[in-house]
Image 1 (tube, rainbow, N blue to C red):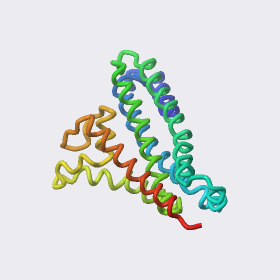
Image 2: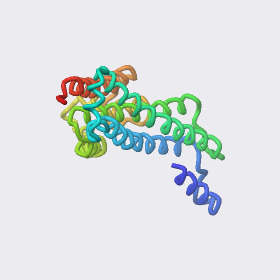
Image 3: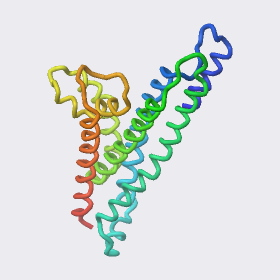
Image 4: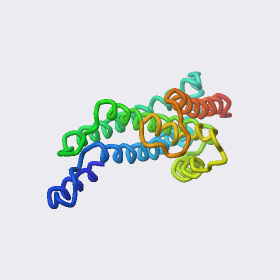
Length: 222
């Protein structure tokens, strides 16, 4: 993202008649959309790694043998993954917002509401992908296949599903549609989703993945 804004600044400085300012509302929305996509990718990788680190390294047996609650062990995976993914995402969102306002020039700059929605989108995307990564990888027990499956779903399957008109209102349950609503971005489909419903969809996906991972951690044989 830093590179992207730098390129826009250089282009505008070299040829302002052709290239507009690097900031502004439109550039901010594009930056946030890209940031949310990267948050999904990074969150999936971080979550899948955290969800299976102790299993693949062979220390889960030792940790469980200490008598510590397996649910507590699983909870530490979740909080640890969020502790990595969320601060990084927050810093990137703060940079995007600041750059879009400072470098707006003659263009309309994003207001406080737009900045809040964009930041919420990025953080929610990171939190959701991380939670899904931890839960699904704990369920499967291997991070490699989970990362591949999650990235395929998040990056390829979702765009297909959200454009399948015959699914009707059921598409409101697709995470990408809910995230776009949270970020107050232009709709990616022809259905309207209330903000409360979008938040509920994200919570449901994260809760389902975490519940599956917690169950598998509690019942895994050692």
